[in-house]
Length: 614
Image 1 (cartoon, helix red, strand yellow):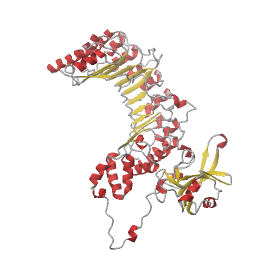
Image 2 (image 1 turned 90 degrees about the vertical axis):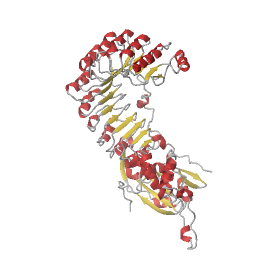
Image 3 (image 1 turned 135 degrees about the horizontal axis):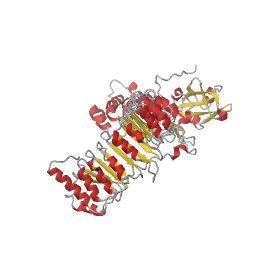
């Protein structure tokens, strides 16, 4: 009967018939020990369990561990021991915690690839063959050419692909040839359930081909994954991690040599200001997203000047006073996202006066009460502006911002989005109508639907979204559609139309433009609304010929994508939530060289700098 011993969560073996096996079902003969006192005499201790073939002890490493009375320097030994018999190794593993002269240290099974039978028992049949003996016939699959094998490979799961590559030298070559095509992008969910050996071989064989990784790091094996990424994925171009707390040590390790990385997203990953310094070597970095992290921003200005897009949404502790210096350090910055962060109007005034962002085109910001954001309109390269309202029933928007936009960006501004509970009166809509360069307009809560008449002069308008304005009449919508000849997207997210008049009038208008060869819109027209009425649904089902799909497409939506985020940041500051629970980072007292036999580094890793004790 097989069973795992009830030891701490990092146990990597199980016992069956008095023999220990790794998670890859390889018999254990080689053990790894750590946290051993330098004064301990290990030979006699391990020989008590059986005959030892080999023991190697690594030089002691000095480390400091903080925390009250535990803040003291200590030397620990690490190493491995190889037993002649599997049963003897299992005896030593029955108690993971060992004791010598009152000192407790730990023993773990070495990983699968370090075990003597990792690749099966040695066969001696070829040595016993006589000249007259015929060799065993080869397997049928070996008769297939490499092209056929590559096609078979792409239908296998990632784990089976690794097993395929491990089968023989020819299959390994086939895998390596196909890996450049199959493994350009990896999601961490693909690694779920994989053993450390499989993950190690995957990154060793395919790491140089991986250009994009995304997903959530498993806390149980985050240390291993960080090491695999650091040593094997140096050609990475995009990394997108979410809810993946990473220590400062691992950040320094991962990004030390990723000189080709262009896009980095570390959302909700507990990144603090000290961690930011580990990104200084990313000399090709263009896009950086640090949303939802407890940053103040003190070190952001020290990052590479190559950054073109910076996202700091929901960084609750960010100090707006650092923003002007950050912008000054990024002369190529084109996009700035600071949603749900308090940035005073004085900061924007300073950015304008210092000419910090000459190329800034996109700004996503949150407007707060008692602040005037008219200086945003003076950003020289501004083309896309999104303004979120901080609180419901609060109207921080003033005419000054729209006046400055109409004065300085009438033809340059292409997208304007006002998201939230603010109300736009006729005067504001009149000022918006002067932004003749607009291609996308998103507004909410207009006071009266006759205000839409003022937008009829937006001849370049292609996408229009109206939210939380249930008092708008159908005639006002149809008039706007008729006068804006390029309009091809109508987002009526809070408008409920009972009749099919809007639908048919839009179809008739498009058919008329087609007949007159005056069509300027991109077809089909996209019409989004909350819950189309049953009358409209029945009409479409009964008369599909009158509502051609190549002319109009209705897309029901209930997503409040602008007001509500799927991200919940409440846990980030909760002292009762341990983000590193059940992670393998409790081995942080060990240096990189100590991870050789724990599966983090390979035997031939050139960067391993430790020497065995003579």
